[in-house]
Length: 123
Image (cartoon, rainbow, N blue to C red; front, side, top):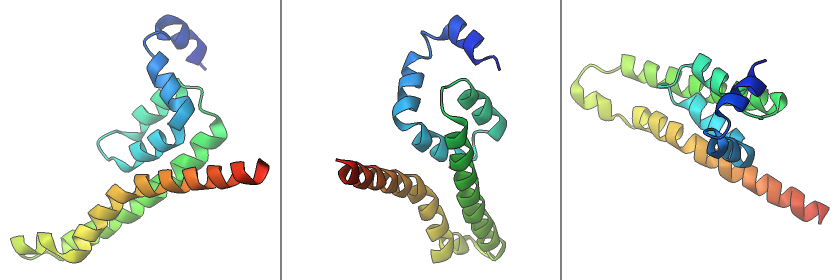
């Protein structure tokens, strides 16, 4: 609703952000959805100021939140099983956090592969 007004006021300061979102906005959003440091309302507000299409925002948010929720639920379940300090190093708990770190990278590679494959089919 206020994107044009905000872009008019501070658009020059957001130029780099806008360029990054145009190139890899889905990857940025997906990664932000997996990082629990940033509240969803702040991500929503920030992405609302960009030119990311609503359709892209919706599906990337859904996939990112689903993946993050699944990994955090599994990690929480495993943390509940810990009865000593050495339990923190359990393979399943470590795997949960490794998966959380790998999700954005795998998603980016998958999207690049899909775009490349689609480009070859059209070309």
